[in-house]
Image (cartoon, rainbow, N blue to C red):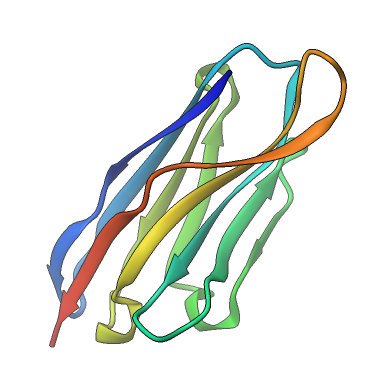
Length: 120
């Protein structure tokens, strides 16, 4: 069984910084990619940033230059450093992992959401 445990988030003023962490645990063959998504009230869940096992990254245009995704492969952990936060970054943030199981099929796993609130 795979579990994703999310930590971080909270409240920040505009212009501030927050850091999110997501650790994958359990038994699996490999992690293909990990990413962060967010969902604001009334909106669909959207991709914020993702990183592949090879280290390639992609970002939503709205966060480019402000957010940085990184990973610690040894710890099966992905981070999201969020700088220059804006009120429009307020949302519930979710971690997702694309994992190859020990039975060699791929599946997506989601962590619990964490609230990020940015005040103006």
